[in-house]
Amino acid sequence: MKFIFVDNPNEGGIKGAQVFKNALANNAKTFGLATGSTPISTYNEITKSNLDFSNKISFNLDEYIGLKPTNPQSYHFYMNKYFFSVKPFAQSYLLNGLATSEEAELARYDRLLEKYPIDLQLLGIGKNGHIGFNEPGTPFDLTSHKVKLTESTIKTNSRFFNNINEVPKYAFSMGIRSIMSSKQILLEAYGEKKADAVAKMINGPVTEQLPASILQTHQNVIVIVDEAAASKI
Ligand code: F6R
Image (tube, rainbow, N blue to C red; front, side, top):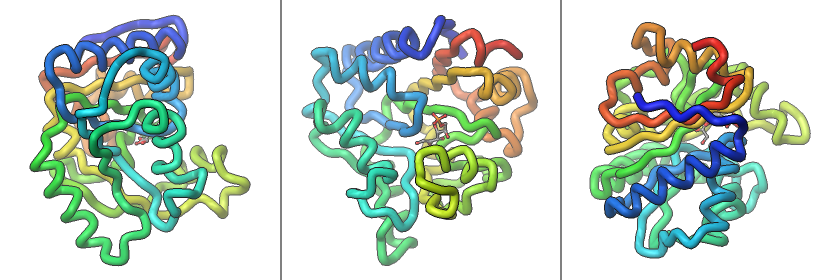
């Protein structure tokens, strides 16, 4: 793992956008994208830049089950707001949280991921060490799957909803096997609340109880952290 220590998320965003720029310079074609608070500064830097994704492909890590793409809490909506409305891709793939056949939807995503291998995958990390919506205990060898969100994740994500009862209980997520197949992974973490997970990801045992710990076994990982998130390393 290569570490980039920054003073704050804004500086992290500048460094994050540079990683995207380098990937483009190296002819990356497919980008794996994340949602949540963490990538916003990177997306802001990218949308201000002259980087061009118009002949590239993107995949998103996850989506809530049951939310329409027009729902402001859906990850479709988030991606349009923070990225695609300014920097469109030739093709952006997201899991469809309204799919009538969940099985068919997951198979569709896995087929696409096989067809278009991810060159650069951006990740945040949950307080419990999740990546994507791969919660503690998720087998490392899963591909796309349906997830029952943990109480911890529901509580954390309720900050974006009017009340906790509106937070979906299920989501679709890309699996850890697919994440690990990416050529390069960029994980960003900011703030004291991520310090425990970051420390365990780096120094703890590789265990399904801390999903991000699997990244210790990937050959090309960049971690951007601020001082608070790095405080327990
Ligand atoms: C989002 C995702 C999640 C988040 C994680 C951290 O697509 O896959 O794993 O990266 O929950 O969320 P934030 O950045 O809001 O702290």
